[in-house]
Image (cartoon, rainbow, N blue to C red):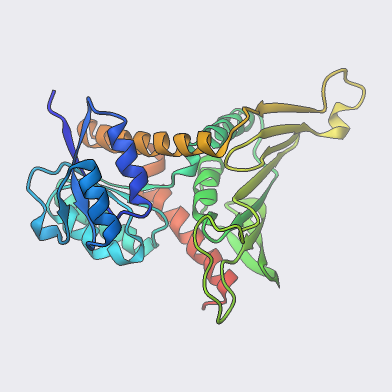
Length: 320
C-alpha cells in the first residue's frame, strides 16, 4: 500500500506531529517540514532526514496531508495548502470566520479541513465524554462548571460540545474579574454554566507561554445530572462520579466512584498526546478516503465551538 506523505508545518508544537507520524511507518511517511528556517527547524529537518521548506510554493506536489501548528501567523499558509488539494489538520484554536473560509476552500479544491481539539482524545477526557453520554441516556445535564486557562479553553469547549451536543442559543455574561481569573456565567446551549478562566496576561505584562508554571490549572470540568456530578479533574484524570446525596440516602453503595483513575506521569501524558495527534491524522485520512465527516469535525461542531470560544474570550479580555 502506498504510504501517505505528510508535511509538518511549524516546529514548536509541530514536533508532536513529527513524533506522531513516525509512530505509523506502515501508513505515513514524512514528506518534509514547512517552517521559517530557524535553527530548531533546520536541526529537526536534519534529525528526521527530510527537506525543510520555507514557502508553500517550494513544497513538492506529492504531499497528501499537512499537519499545521503555525499559530495565528499560519492562516494564509493553510489556505494555500488547501488550494493545492492537500488535506489539512489544523491546530486549535481558530476563529469562526477563518474556519468558514477554510471549509469553503477545502470543498472547492477536493480537500478536507479538520481542527485538532486534541484534549478530547486523551484517555481521561475520552472516558469522561463516554460516561457523560451514557448518563445523557437517562437525563439531560443540569449544570456545567469549568475551570480552564485561556490556552485550554478551546479544548474544554470542544469536550463540552461533544457532551452538550449543541451550543445554539447560549447566553453568557461577565460575572466578575478577579485576576488572574475571570468568571463568566450563563448557559451553554440550554444548560446553566459557570466558567472560571485564568488569563495568561495582564495589561503591560509579557504573556505566559504554554506549559509555564504560572498557570494554576490545565482544565477541570464538572457536569451535574439529577443523579450526581461527573468531574474530569485534569487532562491526566482522574474522572470521578459523585452520587446525589439526597438520592443515595440509605443505599448501601459508595457515594463516589472512580471512572478513570490510571496513575499518569508527565511521560505517560506526553505519549498520550503523541498518540492523540496520530489518531487525529488517521481521522483526517479516513474522512478523505471514505467521504465521511466525523461528528466532531462537522461544520456545525467546529463553528459552534469557535463562536463560543470567541465570545468568552471577548468577555475575559474586555473586547467588544
